[in-house]
Length: 400
Ligand SMILES: *Cc1c(COP(=O)(O)O)cnc(C)c1O
Image (cartoon, rainbow, N blue to C red; front, top):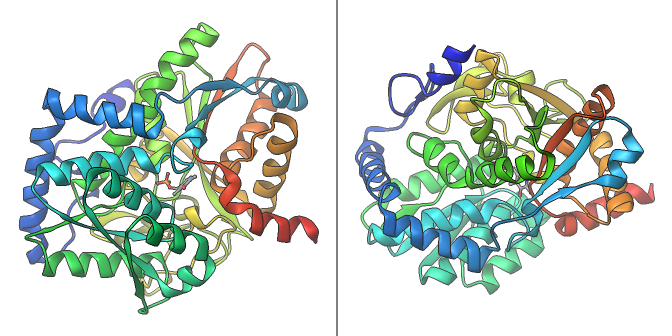
């Protein structure tokens, strides 16, 4: 077990065991190579690190607090529940950690045109914010179906100065927007930087985005040692593409007594088309340039997904999670739409904190887990975002 954890990135860069890699057309190999080279250079450059830390502190609002949810702990009975408050960041979620990092890298690479994909619009908004701050142009691909469902985020992106390109292909949702962004990148690679929103896609994205998000775990590990005098029994985070979860897991990978739990969207049920849980309900396959777990049918066609939480609604998952699952280092579970709504209500009313529906999945599982643990134990939950964006959806469900 210990050996596994130590050799966790496998031997080849960009491979997590057999997962990850670069399953892309020939034309993308050179831009990916150039990106990897620039990232390797700047990620070790003290002045880049210092500049990024400055943006994270004064623009995004880092460090975020660690909060002991005492009322929730009392209500559940069992382990103490601590929340890492990424919901307090600018833009309302962890996504700004990654968009600031990549936008600054793009600027150093001399790229002035930034493209991105977005599903619910959260990554598009975080990209637009980072680009405006750094003086870069942003263009965001978004499925037209998603544009209808997430009008407010479309307005936000436009107000922040970004251009939004509707995508009419396929199911007109996130996976189609990613395909379209990759196509744009191939065509305009000279002046364009592709700012991917999670730990997915071809190498170096899963590694680079994880590094930018690992600030969450670095802070949280110190904070919980200080608050609690010891490491938590478990770390819990929701998994869409997997960036907030890998970001908090990473500092605990070598602490083998700390159990790591990734919570996928169980949706309505685990039947095909009714969830967004590729690690629990999918199979190995290739999607968006990576070998990973994918929700697919018998013929290998990508399946439609479903979740009350738009940010978790993706048929694939970051390759490092596939690796951590197979190694047994992290466990992956699901929480249904219904359970996430209950957790949203509970946390809102007991703590005065409205979680994003994505994060409510993690809260729900943490409540179950806390009950099964002793009162001397603690659980660290990543509260990846705030729920203001979800009030309309929740109001509809609660009224029923
Ligand atoms: C986008 C989003 C997620 C899912 O993305 P990951 O890459 O899995 O972190 C989770 N929570 C919030 C609040 C989000 O906006």
